[in-house]
Structures are given as C-alpha cells and as structure tokens.
Amino acid sequence: MANSIHNLLSRNLSGVYRDPQRILRDVDTLLNTSLGRNLRPKTEPLTSNDGSVTPSVLVLHGTLPMVYRNVTYNIPIDLYLPPQYPQCPPIVFVRPVSNMAIKENHRHVGRDGRVYMPYLHEWGAQTHELRELAVWMSSLFGSEPPCYAKPAGASRVTATSNVASSYGSSISQRPPAYAQVSQSFASSYNPYTAVSNSNNNGSREAEGQERRKQQQIEKEIAEANLAAQVAREESLREAKLKAEHSRLQKDHEEKLSSMRVMATSKVQYELQVVFRDAKDDLRVTLKNQKLLDYGKEEIQQLLKEGEERKKELMTLNDEMDGAVKNLEGWLEAAETQQQQEGENDDSNLSSQSSKVDQMALPVDTHSSQMLQLAAENAAIDDCFYFLDQSLTQKNIPLKVFLEEVRKLSKRQFTVKAHLIKISQAKALNPFA
Image (tube, rainbow, N blue to C red; front, side, top):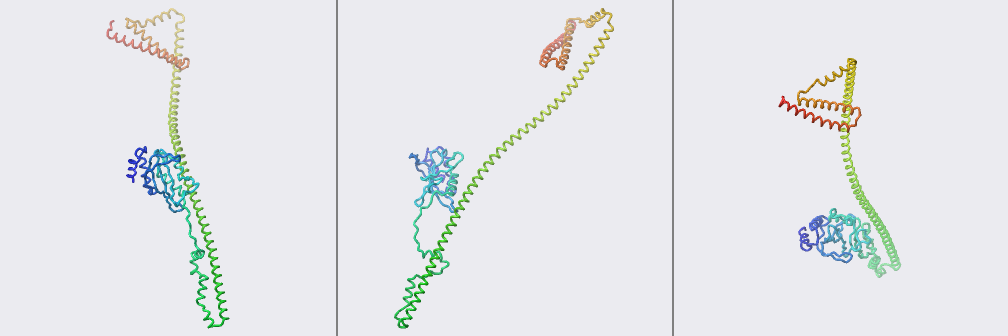
C-alpha cells in the first residue's frame, strides 16, 4: 500500500504537495488501522463551494466503520487532502449510496455531505493527523449517524396469517373456514339417501343441528381471531415501548458516558496543569529557602565575628587608655620633680637643655644626615600614634586620618630608604 501511495505522489501528484513524506506517513498510518482498511487512495480534482476547481489531489475513497447500538455499520466517505496539507485540514464528504440518505439538521454533516467537526476546526499541522481524525469521525457518527436507510414498500399480510404466525405456538392447527365446513357437510350429506333412510322431519332436524354447529364454529373462530388480533396489537405495542425505552436509555447512557469521558479528560488536563505549576513553584520556593538559610548562616557568622572583634578592639582601647594615663602620670611626676629640683636655677636649666642637644654630635656629613633622618623617622612614628589616638577619640574623621597616614607613610618610606643608602655608602667608605 505504501508503494502505491508513493507512486501516486511521485507520478500523478508531483509538485502538488510541499511535504510528500508527511502525507505518505499519515496516509499509510491510517490505512494500516482497522478504521482505514476499507479506504483506497486515488486522484481526483477538488471542487470548492465557490465553484473553483483545484488540480488533482489525493483522495481516500471507501467506507469508515462506526458502531451504533452494538452493531457495526460502514459509512461511505471521500477524504480529500488539499494542496496546502498539512497546514490546512482535510476535506471530508459523506457519500450515501442509492438506498441511503443524509440525515437532515445533522450537527456535523451538511446537506451536501461535507463533514464539520471540532477536530477539523482546531486542526494543527504538528498536533493533528488522519488517524485521530478517523477515530473522531467514527465516534461522532456512532453517537449520531449521518445517514439512514430509505424506507422500502412492505408486503401486506392478511389478518389470518398474522394470527397464525403470532399464535402458532399456542394453536396447534388453524380452525377450518366456513366454506370448507359447508363443503364437507354437503359431501357427507345426500338428501336422497336421507329420504330413503329417514323421514323428512328427521332430515330437517339434522340440518338444523348442523347449521347451529356451523354457526357456533364460526363464532368461536371470530372470537379467536379477535382475541389473537388484540393480543398481537398489545404485544406489538409493548415491544415498541420496550424498544423505545431501551433506545432512549442507551442514548442517555451513551451521552452520559461521552460527557463523563470529556469531563474526565478535561479534569485530568487541568489537574496536570495545576500539578505542574505547583511543582515549579515549590521547586523555586525550596531553592530560595536554601539560599536564605545559607545567607542567614553567613550573616550570623559575620555578626559573631564582628562582636568578637569589637570586644578585642574595646579591650585594646582600654589597655591603651590605661597606658596613656600611666605615661601621663609619669610625665607629670617627672615634671614636678624637675620643677622642684630646678626652681631656683634657670641658668642650670638652659645649660642642661643645651647639654641635651650636645649629647649626640655627628663627626661627619653622613652621620649628620643619618641623625636628622632618624629624628624625622621617630617624629613620623609619634605622628602615627597621635593620629591613631585622635581617630579613636573621634576627633578627626576617617577620611582625614587615611589621607594623613598616606602622606606620612610615603615620607617615612623615603626617609628609611635614604637611611639605608647612607648606611651602605658609609659601609663602603667609612672614612669619608
């Protein structure tokens, strides 16, 4: 079957379709199912409702099975694949045979036989295919057949044959007709023999009895026929009522089952969507929760380290304040002692100060430079100390502190480098 379809597409329909492989796959899948085994491919032009005619297209001609009231029927159809397939949906027509007719006001089939259904209306090239289309049509046609058989003339049946056929099981033999009884009586009765064997009075009496017996038989036959007719009509009426009740109940069950299937499918789809969204939200929430927990631990660790550092700095600050107080006390005591020792001799004080300046006298140029640079380095260290004290006591802002420290650091680096060079030069030439 696939080879024949491929031959049609390559020979007769070359250039008609944009995606021949898709058509070959969809048609072959449909024809290999139970719903499409009675369909045969052929080529035929497609005439639109506006009268326009397309070039020859692929047509699947045959019958589609449907199950109606537990009986399988075959609906003749023509399934056209337009040149724009699969971007455009197929075009399907119901083709009733001579003894069939299309049902009027059908929900899915027009008067011209064209099929209209939600699956065709919602057609998508990536989501729909011919096999599912056949399943939808078989299901919809099974719930509401699009065709019906035209009524044929029924032969008339006599009342006597109907009674005999209806009550054959209860009446072993049909009662004889009046003509048969009269003929039988006439053949068994000879008036001349009766005259010869009896007198006229006996003959009339026997004839009257036979007449009464015949009338009785006719009456019984009429009553039996009437009762049979009434019983048959009652039986037919009950059968019709039962059949109608069964049909209505089955239709109701089919509609209920269809609604139940549709409702179940819709609820399952909605539940899947809700479950998927809830799962995504839960995944994002858990991820955020883990990030928050990790950040919380880091913040707590930083706070703990900050508290410990704060305690250490406060301890150092207290120790430094104590040392400063001790130094200030020592200086005050030294100044007091010095004042007590030299209150009366100003000249001695001036001489002592001059002696302090003369305690270290350089003997050469290098020594003089090294003395000045060492004094400047010590002075810079003292500046660092007092800047740190000012920052601790919040007398100067941090920005000013950093700027001054940067300047002094650069100067101290230069001083120390100069000292190192002088030391190296002095080591090379100690007598210079």
